Length: 129
Length: 188
Image (cartoon, rainbow over all chains, first blue to last red):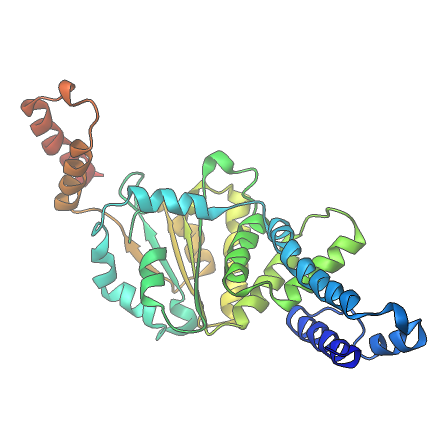
C-alpha cells in the first residue's frame, strides 16, 4: 500500500466516522495537508494503520461510557426475570381485544397513542405478553 | 408485551423499548434516567447515533461527569425516535414511580408522541394512576386487567409442579389452593 492510498483511506474512514457519529475526529481537508507540511518521512504506513486502529478503538471504547451517561439503569435484567417467570399464553387475551388491535394498528393516530392497562396488585399486569 | 411487540415487529425501522418501574428503586428511577434507559435501548439497536455521540462529547468537555438533565435526554430521545419508522415504548407499573416523576414521565411521553405521532405507548399501573394518565392522554385506550379463573388455575398448577417442598403438600391442601386463590383473585 502506498502512502497516498493509505492517507486517502484514513481520511475516507475518518470522514465516514464523522458522518456516522456527527463529530470531527480529524479535519478531512487539513489532515493530508498537515502530513505534507510536516516531516513526511515519519508518516509511514504503520503510523496510519495505528491511527485507523485508534479511531476504531475510540468508537468501541466510548459506547459503554455513552450508555452509562445516558442512564445508570439497566431494564434488561428485569425483563429477563419477567420472561423467565412468565407462563406462556397468560395475558394473550389482551392481544385479541379490539382495543389492543386499534392501538397497535396506529389508525387512531395521536389520540389513540396510549394504551393503559390497569389493575390491582397481582392481577398480572407485568406479565402480559 | 415487549416480547409480543418484538415478535410482531420484524420490520425495518420498528423498535420496541421498555422499562419496569420499581418502588424499591424510586430514588434512582428519575424521569431523566428512565427516559435515558429507553434511549439506550434505541441506541443499542443500531449503534450510537450521531447526535447522541456529539452531545456526549460536548458534556464530557464541559464538565467531567456531569449528569444529564431531563430536557436534554428527552430532546435526544425525540430525535432518536424521529429517525425510526415507529417506536413502541412500554412502561410497567407507573404507580411505583414517585408522583413527581410520574407527571414528568407522562409529560415527556406526550412530547414524544406530539413530534412522532406514530409512536405507540403501552403503560400499566394500579387503578389510581388512571386519573394522571387521562390528564395527559385524555383520549387514550384504557383496558382493565383481570386474569380469568382458568389462567390463574393454570398458573397455580405450574407453580405447584415446580414446588421444591413436596413433602409438605397433600391432596387436600392442593385442592384448597386451586379453589381458594382463584376465587379471591377474581374478587379483586
